Image 1 (cartoon, rainbow, N blue to C red):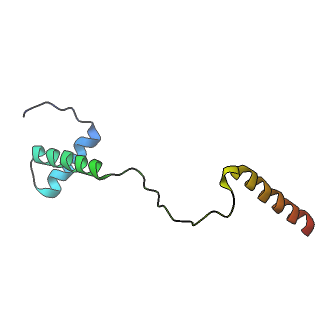
Image 2 (cartoon, rainbow, N blue to C red; image 1 turned 90 degrees about the vertical axis):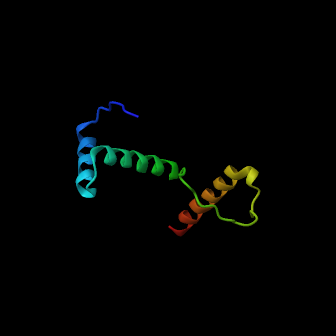
Image 3 (cartoon, rainbow, N blue to C red; image 1 turned 90 degrees about the horizontal axis):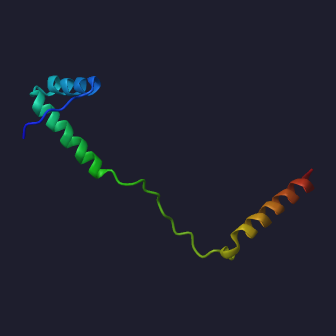
Length: 83
């Protein structure tokens, strides 16, 4: 298919560098760059966060904010007693 594409100066330079490095035509360098970019985009998965089994909770997590507050209170008490 024949079409007209307007390239920004920086992308034209990249294609020309690819041409020189690989000894190919402008058309071939541009098509290869588009293919590689499309493949790379298809391979990029969403950010993956590893998941770890942490066992059975030792506290009732339905009241997690209360647990956090109790732990914070305990830490403050320990600091005050240490002074």
